[in-house]
Amino acid sequence: MKTTGFRTLVLGTPWRNLTYCIIETDEGIMGIGEARVLGKTHTVIEYLKDAERHFIGHDPFDIEALYRRMTLLDFGKPGEVVYTGLALVELAFWDIIGKKTGQPVYKLLGGQVKEKIPAYANGWYTVERTPEAFAEAARKVVDRGYRGMKFDPFGNGDMELERPEFFRSLDLIEAVANVAGTRAQIMIEMHGRFAPVQAREIARHIEKYNIGWIEEPVRPGDTPALQSVRQHTSLPIATGERLYGAPEFREIWGSQNVDVLQTDITQSGGILETKKIASTAESYSIMVAPHNVGGIVSTMAALHLCLTLRNAKILEHFNDFADPHVKKAGSGYPEVVDGYFPVPDKPGWGIELDEDFIKANPPNYTESGIIADPGLNMFVNANWAKRGQDD
Image (cartoon, rainbow, N blue to C red):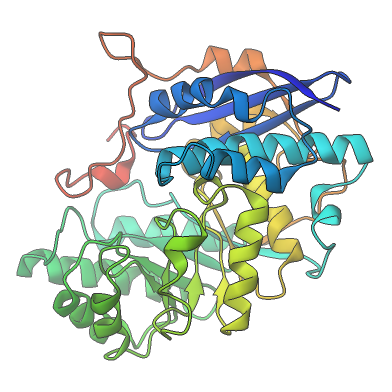
């Protein structure tokens, strides 16, 4: 089998675009990949055009060779754009492989080791930053059966919070914790904002709650800062969504700074490379909770991965609360039921894209015709958590 061509589609949302890569083969089998990259959708699509020689005309079964071509043969050190482009292609290749063999992808990655995968909700707090509003939003998450929920209560803080915002954030955490109780863990997202002294102070104030983890308490990749936080809190620490490719995880191994690894399939070169990272994490007794801010395909891919991991903990899910329209991008969406993702059983991803729907919901464009990526701008915009929703 050889690949013969590819095309891309982009589904718009108020704060992140979802890019789909559809790859065709000489046997009539098509595969789909999906990724999101804030601020660089146009760049990733143009990169795929530049790198077409690395995946068109090749056998989609040769995943290791694909990785080698796209990360080594162009000589330059790959980063976010390359790994995202690679993931788009790699996920499409796995879809093709699954369809060709008549197997769901997880069966081809070592098989199922987990009976089902628990989900935690994100994107649910697009409300006013008041304890009452956060509590009401959290109640809806718990009532829907989720065992966990993640949120960032810190407004537009950077390095440290002004004291009124510090105490306001603590009030928001307390309000959500009171709703969640022991029914659901809460994960505190810090988005790599803080200096270690501020992260330590926040951790000290919230240790009394049912906290699943604190996430990216300091800048990603700042190992000494992370070590400082680790030495001063008993709370679990999660990180990894902004580490691109296996080499950037090197300093985590053996450091004992991280309890939960959050590798993102769409920014680490695809599902096979992420599985290798997760397997290394297991050797150091680190659990894995893949970062997942994607739509139908990348959510499904993360679910397939988790089913194969002995150290899988829980999987992130946005689309019940933020931009639920992204579920309509195709059939076969892996809906969360009573707090868990079901086990898929169809070949490949088991997804059929609705290209007409995607085309009817395009991204915004700049005046020069470039895809606009609104992003969150959380270091400046105090209302970033509304994610483009109307007040």
